[in-house]
Image (cartoon, rainbow, N blue to C red):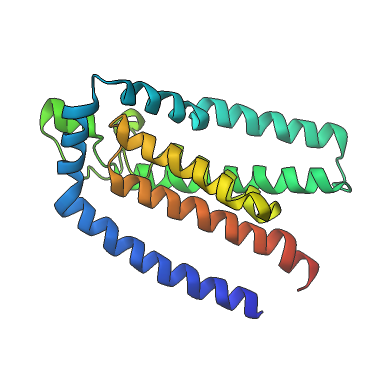
Length: 210
């Protein structure tokens, strides 16, 4: 019970802090940062490097990998008796839930992507938008990266720094390639991290009666 109460408190406090930083970035810094990145990095190797890093959390690739892992679990250990299948299932559930949450917010908020600012001078929200290619917040790549790598860090804590560093690089790459604003990445990281944390609590702790 104390673990759950602690997680509720941490989630609430972090959500408030994230919302404040998001709003500051949205109103005062996002446009300037992305315009600067676009002007100085768009024709350099840094853009290409960012593209390669972003590919690690590409939507179609991750979703296909999650589906493949679910199939492997069903075929190899449908009763989830082995530790590796329990771990893999936890990661898959975390990633899937995070993706659904992220897509929900993308549809609800419908924020214009940076390309709309560069080409049409459009900035802000167009709520309840199904134009997925134009919806920027939260960053889907960042959600996928942080949900999966945070989940992995809960399971293999000695590699936490490595996992979170990779997720951070992927999030930063989305700004480098000007596919997202910094606040989109921040929002995506919040969703990914706390989806992994809540899923871990229910999957491993509450399920065991602790």
